[in-house]
Image (cartoon, rainbow, N blue to C red; front, side, top):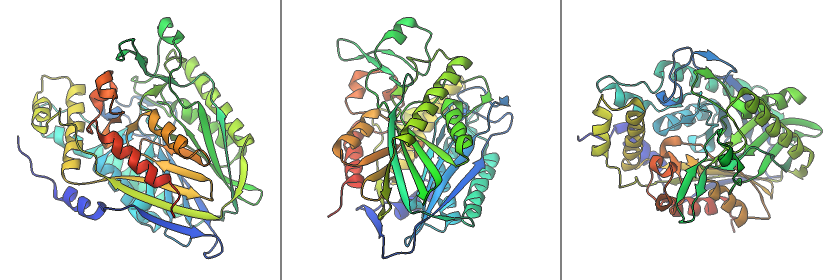
Length: 462
């Protein structure tokens, strides 16, 4: 089945794709004082709305509201927006649309806006392209509530505009880290043959799986706080794991990471924002039995690490602010052709989950074929702090590599930006097997582009 590339995608490609990294920098002394605004908006879907892109039971009730939280940093350059959303994913043209709307609200440009989902599964996926693609087929499963999602985004944009009426000067930062006890474990358990032997996902009641080692993780939760003299203005937290204790029951929840975040906000009355790091191959399966008790315990461990990371914090002046953006065009995995996936989507006898996954993949193929890049960005604060923003369900190795490349810097990584890529494993992961490569939409050689972009975003410019 042949399809025409949407004109919107072609237009996005011409606007967004450029050959070189863009960078803007502000030095103390040659610019007005740096200011900060914080925003908070409810983005909880109504009863009946699809959750996890239609892959699980739709909304039947709400345990806790879902929130879009963030900061706007103002300086001599155009504002920078950092936004974390309690949704499963925001993908492709929807992610571009979110950045456009928040940029307009903040008086900046879309490449200076970072939008990241936390990836809870009893939460929406924004992928209007997949939704509309399926809508044209027989007995289509629903991916999202288009009308409500647009209203939710409008609310977030309005909260950004309102926040800019109440800004505070930033005099300095603090940064710290602390180990998280008994939360994260690697999902991919390798056999003696170098292949994935077992998958330990978000929860497990299998005692043998729970007894196995944690595997490769990043045990550290990192925190960056903004201050005006002795007044803390906001705190940003970063930790890498799938943030689900249990899901699929239709009860909307921000789950254990949201529980910890909201508790910290209540602790000191200051906004706390949480970003999920490179948790594509990381989950709580070793320590989580998938019960309410487990959820509470996991939240306790995250909260404890948040408190400890702030207690260990180093105070640094905000002498330097630099934003970098690098558009990257990741190629589709050639093993899955659009023609083949369209046959899956059009077969009403195929399970809804398989059809939805195929629609997601076609969305990425078309996004990439149209030449629409994915924005990789970073924010350098002072001489030491570097905040890295990556797309998709990136593997933990990207986060660890970024920190190892720049050991003298404080590197905090947010993944789950543009979710159009699905998982982003390592190239060798495809030969190793396991679940993630089957839902990785970009070609295996994308690893090199990932590593190159990360290096360019974080290195010190001459």
